[in-house]
Image (cartoon, rainbow, N blue to C red; front, side):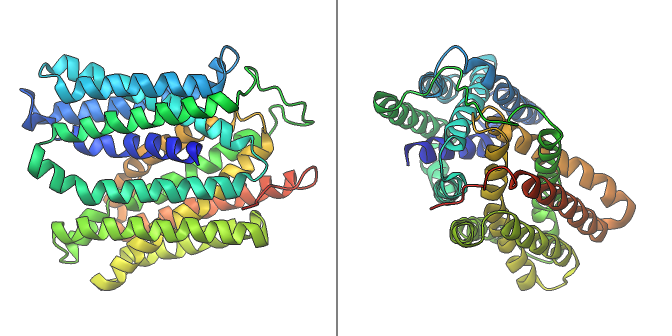
Length: 375
């Protein structure tokens, strides 16, 4: 549970921070574009530090590295909460991105080394959705009462909680520095780049809709306030998807449920951009979040099967961030060519391509060792 909480803090803070950083011109003497640049930089350095982190596993245990990263995150978030100089704020934002990238890498590596990978990742998804939904639901009220800086102070407190949990975990669990598991076929082969490509493509396809749903909802006559509430309900839908993943994984393994969830996601992506009915669109938005959360634990189970040392799975968050960043950019091109209808078709096609790659890799790995999918 400690790992699930730390993973949730890292994911929720990393993905949510960009939303709040874009509004820092309200509290700092900067131009509106400055916040957007800082948000992009933070996501970029989070992905970069996530990719680099496995090289640090040879020098320290994952528990110790995660604890140090969480303490650094608390300091950086504190700078953002208290700093009135834009450059100090920017340094804190970039440092927070680095820290969260390291935290995510360590937490995912430790989760990947467990014997019930898919089930543990599903638990982590449940924690993540719960934390993110609570954060989104309360953030507006907190900002109204205490100002935007209160958000950064909350992030510092969450980082301190993560540091405390990792300190407790390190007292009774100490992973080896190199985490060298003598597993046959665990080295680099065609399955690793294929899985990395599939993971990135999955989030490119999903994000092509997700980042444009506010605009699509506006075209259907849904007010911005109602769309914000809809996104909160979608988070609750994500919780349902994570629970569904846990249940299906225990009974049906990994490959078949993954094909089901990705196939359904592709169909819903097409329906979401073509329906003229706002109620149907709302159900699609909730379903997309639920199906995404239901799919990710299976993906991480495949990553862990390819490298039980956790070094390859620890890079999963970087692949996710790359996909989330690339999806909207690709969608803009399709939007110019054929509108949102073409965006939905393209997103569905990309998701189905990733599903085929996942299934191919998943079936190829089952011949040597079954994918763990316990509770």
